[in-house]
Image (tube, rainbow, N blue to C red; front, side):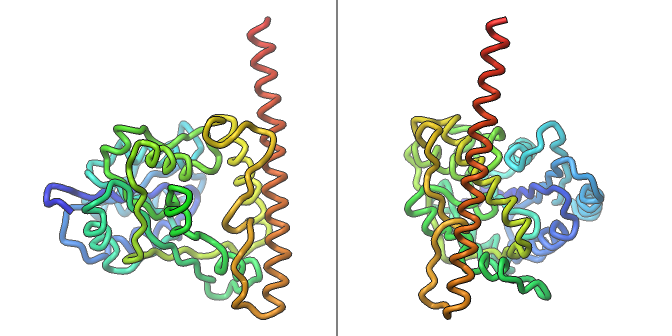
Length: 300
């Protein structure tokens, strides 16, 4: 990384004080001699998350706590972080992600010859929460290398992007409930820039452990697919037929599994694929309703 560059680590967070503590502590303990700051963006939390953010800001000059309370969206929170950040390179992580001590140093080195860098996410089962859903997530989630090489994006919690990229192609689309990471990455690739994956670093993300939480996520992802088509039909097709999802709702590589886990994972995969389909249909109907209301208003 150029000696004139500096890093801004942006953390959007909502109602997750313990996850925020884990992430900030991990960043503060990284071995990095260059200039960097941490920008925590609280997305209108209803618990003590913002108090935690402010306590870090009061104790560490490099930590800043800001609020995005106009729009409830992780993408809006990331955009607010971009606005407040001062670095030339913007690194995005989610609250509850942890990292190795050399994480920032590796990013600074690896981004030297690229504008958009993404890296691996290792999903782990939290202590005392060994459920089938957690194991399924550990086995199937975040195929970041495949995303980068075949679908032109990286996950929002594992990318580093040069500031001039945002100045050129714009920021994240806060109207999307899901899929904003993919849409932004696709926009970057369409501008002629390379989406680069590096195996030299990774971060660690706890698996979702409850069936209810995972089903809610899959419904949200399904809604995001439909929104992508509605906002960008030239890129993702017109609403009506959902694209086949990948990741935790799609097929998994299970040749290394014994019979019982293989069977359970396939059943869960079908369930979550169905949840994505439900989310897609819900958004399709809701979007048609919104469009109908707008037409009625314009005709009156």
